[in-house]
Image (cartoon, rainbow, N blue to C red; front, side, top):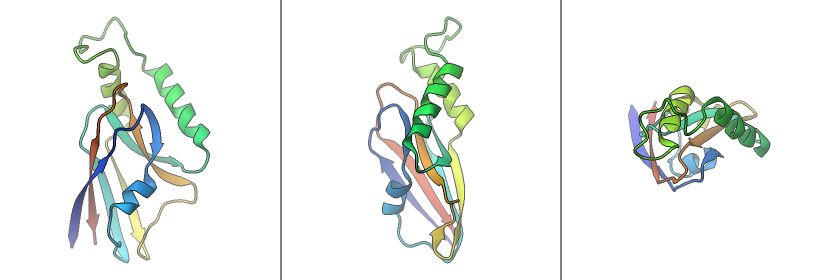
Length: 136
């Protein structure tokens, strides 16, 4: 059996945001065993799994990715939507658009320190859509 639901994230400031509880609060009970796949329907943000406890990890991710992929580089030609547009697309490709998490005993089987991150790479964020597919 497969179930699917669209989850809308409100506009979140640029940065790395822990959204595990937001995802869980928008879904019904999980099956005893299965997989949840989350797919982000956008090209200038990302999804990943990482540290769920210390917010400084998310701050360090933001600082580090901005050092790796800089804005306003002279070689960018895709700039019609601002200096953050092309860098956001590159960051999105590096981070990725989806995560799959096992479901065990009716719960997401995340590691002790793992949480779901939404990564906003635009300076003027908008609402974002995630498709949650649960395979039973």
